[in-house]
Image (tube, rainbow, N blue to C red; front, top):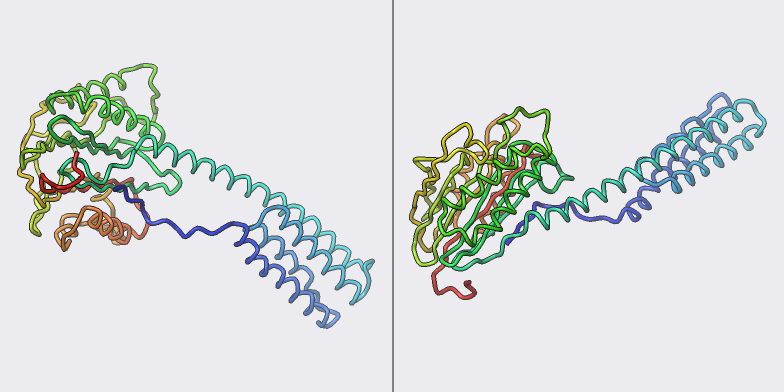
Length: 378
């Protein structure tokens, strides 16, 4: 099951604008009535300019222009009641109000156009996420799976964190990774690794062969002179941390190769155990600078056990006091249940810890082993 972060309640822009329209119109009525009743030496007409200015902050150009016209009409009514339209003071007030209404109407048009561009970009981001970071199935073979992706940039939807799963003849392979950097280059690198994993995970017989293939793919791309290059990054600083797991269907174990990634956490009977590998490999793309030793390490993985995969955006998230998110402790306090429940709890707790704003993208995948005879496997 693919979980999404909490979304804001959807409101139709037109309905919201109509409700807020009462504020500037009410302001016009109040200023007009008070100005008419005020002593001759008191002039409140300049306050009418606030009505179209406020409207421009939430409405489009047509509504802003309408409120500006109403404000001008109200100023004309005040002028006729108090003196006349040809009075010098009121003439200047009306002229200034017309000019300012025109200006704020233009700015309202620019704001609406900018919001439309953001909406299109958000749609592209959502489409990119659906194609690139496909939701993991709720169950693969004897495994129950849940995943969540939290983008640091609210409009981005996706960044350099990645995860994927694939079935093999003997079990299930999973990957979680984190591309160094941000922006379009990080998304491109994530797409490269995900594409290579999906193409090879089901046909590479051994996990070290698969990791070597991914390493070759990343290194080849980094050496490609035609590939996009971010001048803000020095050569040799582009890499991808990753953890790859091979979970056999018929054995109560899991095989791990860790390429510089935070260790997975094994949850069993209320205890949390980091799956630390004794011979970790360097991140993908750094074998030129560090010898690659893709050694498989095996850990027990029994029925009911849960393995939590995550990126460093989770454990490096800070609260207002600068304290990192204590993932181990929060997982240890989990009362138990399925992976979906675990990720919902962690997602809400992480956002609460960070004050609702993450400093980096964060991804989590929870995997639970089911009994071999569980229905729906395969």
